[in-house]
Amino acid sequence: MADTSGWITIKNLTKEILFETDKELSDYKKIMHYVINGIRDLSLYHFDLVKTVKVTCDDLGIIDMPSDYVNFISLSMADGGLMWTLTRRDDLIRTTSTSEDDESLDSDIGEGVEIADGTAYMGYMTVGAKNDGYFTIDEKEQRFIVRPILTETLFLQYISSGVDSDDGNATTIPVRIKDALKAYIAYKEILYSKDTDKRLVDLYKREYREEVSKLRFLGLPTADELRDMVYRNAQRINR
Image (cartoon, rainbow, N blue to C red; front, side, top):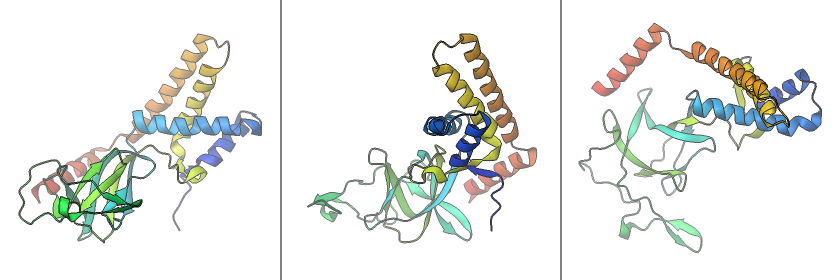
């Protein structure tokens, strides 16, 4: 069984904050709101929270974006125990045809048509990529389109907001960011309270920034980790 001692659910963190600040249970929703916004603030503006999930294409070669998706990193397939990125092609036809509310692919206009072998293409993520499959990103429809339609499990890496809306209160966060979240909540409560002394707002804001700085220091890679990152990138390009 995995060791989860270094993680806490946002539900339990909210209860912990209520207890430590002597707040009433009626404040639960407000504090939960601040916790979620604090996680998103840390994830979006201070740290890249990279997430890797297993995904599969549906019958139309479509993969829906996760609810916590913020930005794309890679879409890969397994090969010899490693993840090899598919090649991104933004000239793929990404439309589908609809008949009586059912989505389908019309090959007469190129929808779902497999790309001919040997097609030359120079574009994003072609170096080191695996050309067993191609994909494009449809940001408007919040999905990925894969050609040919692959039946195997793929691996999607992306920047996460830190909060999965499909997972709700069960979303877990690292225990080490608790102090930063508590500082964020204290800052926001002072900021939005009536008749607040501006000096207090500045004080709590500085305390939040100090907690973020501590996290940045803890998150710095060691010299060995930096060498490993350089080596992995070089190997991927050379292959």
